[in-house]
Length: 503
Image (cartoon, rainbow, N blue to C red; front, side):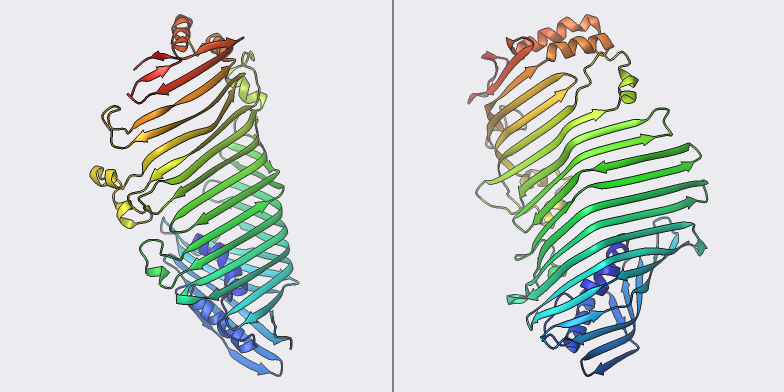
């Protein structure tokens, strides 16, 4: 129900009609809106009247009802006009504002009713295309959702909220091709997004205030849905999803007060980006946020300051079974993490450790064979069943550490390497396919870090010599507090560290 409440007012009354199947006339566009509503599931459109004029169609007293498992959404629009421009396009006009009511039952049995107001300034919608596909182009100076009232079990709750897009522009195109494959492309751009939330907790006696803004929003996507997608147990042939999202600078400010005291903070970012692709054969996801600056005060006795140059995650992996090995890759990025002095002082008041930015970057790639489709329900059911999991588990054939960077408290670890795996040999390394290959590591500043940790009491003095001896088994000095380590597993299953066999 939460997802429905966030997207339905815009999607149902502006982008709902994206899949036209007729000429671009007023009646055909209106018919397409109704067909679009039917595709949303348990949705009904009722109208007071539909009046034809010389240049178009006017629909009055429209009531859109969308029902979900946990509740329903009802939007009421006094009038919508579909005006034929004479050049093969239709202009759609909606009121400057209309109400949307969302009702539902929460997890704890609380009946919630949310009254929203859709407010739009300068909205223009133009429909063009041909009988097989209609394109919707829209623009607005401002498009906003405003919380008019929030009730729980009939009791009015003190809350205010606004979500608005400024200088909005976008398009939506959908068409049905051969064998019922429905393709949709869309893009949205806005100069800024604004968010404002004010609320009170009557039971605990607290208050909360959140204000946010995001600049340079750009979102685009493509979706292909085969006929009968709703009944398919796994991703069917022909399904495809693509999604790209990017923003410029963003700022969130919040403050709250409750029984434990007052808290406030700000979070800033320079930019963010997300990419997602999904089809029956593969899934890929990548995210990146740059320039995070987070500052918090209260209820802790000291302020918290955290900054990150960049953080993100990436994964590209096969989903479909096949006899041949398939490529995969993954990455984790946490670059230039810094903490404010008040946090450092908690565990290092004497500033023994260098307070340099910390970094973790790990990039992996490899090949694997999938005996079963990962989207197959039978594969999901195998989780928890040892024998079934063994049959469904991917067989990794090669794994490369393309890049490893770890910087922490003055020490640095760099690494790369590659291994292949014999999936016929689970005896040399019991329960694990036998690897063959090597990894090379370069370490700087490790001895100084060990000394500092001993000074802080993290490593007891009596264990310091043992830690250095253990380190000597796996590393070779190559400079002033610089070490090198080469760990190799050969064809016989021997583990060799810097030329010395240790297994």
